[in-house]
Length: 273
Image 1: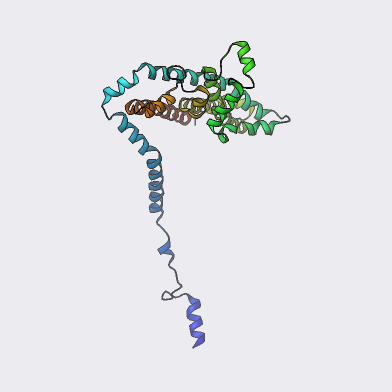
Image 2: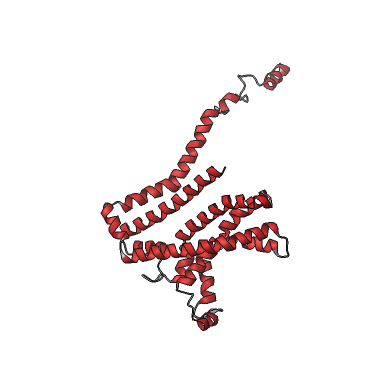
């Protein structure tokens, strides 16, 4: 009798309490595929589409006319032009210097190369607010470099040069990190083609990041209305002043510009492939 019980338990018969049906635990491949797609769609919808929908609803709360009036305000136009100027300067500087840095790090071996390569990622680790504060320590009224800037008559802190420096810092890694893997993958003869792919994408990310920079800029600029206010700083002030249509409208414009930049670059990448 004991042998029969042991035999029955060892065979894992369908009636056994410990038997498992593999078909009960597995999912059909097509069902698993749609579950994964649904999870990704839900994730993107909650984090991106829902906030965008709320932004559009807030901007159009009082109709399209309110949006036009809000964006036509002198302070708003000034803030957008200042944002565009900073972004263009940053892109030009990184187009030259960032490309040179990427090429040197890939093609040259020298002492301190690893340290330099690690420093490129510093803006990813340091809070933009901290970056703005560091610029204050350097160029503020009692900053380390204040005697030099005073001697040459250039105001950096709470002025446009400081805002450009802050944006340069936070956007530094983009073009370097986009170019380096492609330069690694291809030979010297193909560097021109590599630059076409990584260079454009890196510049686009740099421009989009510069458009939306807030933390470092608000610290170094002081957010002076009509003088050192960028589009993001205007959005912050407008929300604080309960000018919701203006803030939503400006945020919507910045978001759409960044989205079009990224989508356009992705389209160019597909054509290159």
